[in-house]
Length: 284
Ligand SMILES: [Zn+2]
Image 1 (cartoon, protein in one colour):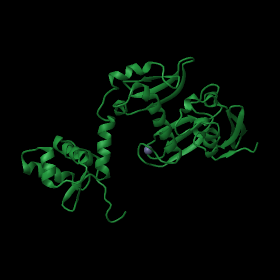
Image 2: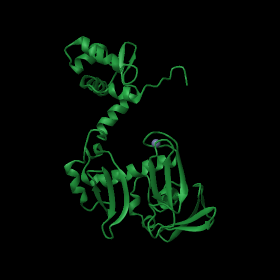
Image 3: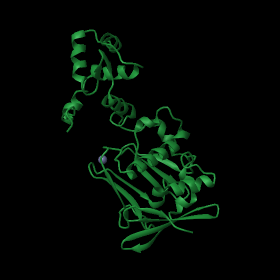
Image 4: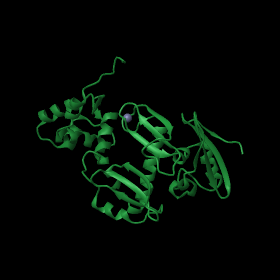
């Protein structure tokens, strides 16, 4: 450990926040555009008893509040507390009532069903009720967005979370993730040959997707789409026909190797993925 690094127990860290004045201090520092002096911060929080205010502020200094050059500001942990409050993950028990209207057909030709009890959202294609995605989504994401914007927001959230896991980082705990190609997963559909799965070695958080979803971030796939007028950084991937067909074919059982064809406008791009998720473009 570095000399300036220290750890405190999670119960101690969370208990430090269990007070309205302390949450008020963190909020006031976040709302301020610049570091605040003691009196400026005191005025904004509005607690009359200066001794009490000082007591609560000192509890936060060192972890959730940073004191620098006689002023106070939010360090990383303080910003993460604000993020947790705004996301609603720990403070909302269900989705907003407004989200019921998301059951309608969306711009990506599907429909959303926020599950208010389990707080997972489900995306399905109405024509065949095919399940596309089920995943956790913070209730705070509903605030300030139109219903029409939500499917895209869901998709970007999902793709980014999947991409971070594919990069070896757990979006839940920042631990290390391990990815593999699997043929015996409970998540495998009947007609599906293989899927890609990522598991966090620390918290056990888990992501499973079809091989095509994994290949969406391959530079050759991104370039292939770009050449066909599709910007994968902007356009919805759920409208792509090849992705819906999920064309993963096993070419070798041991060691496992699958082949995948991405088809756009009559042109084909062939890729292979092995069990350790090493991918390659096939020579055509
Ligand atoms: Zn994790």
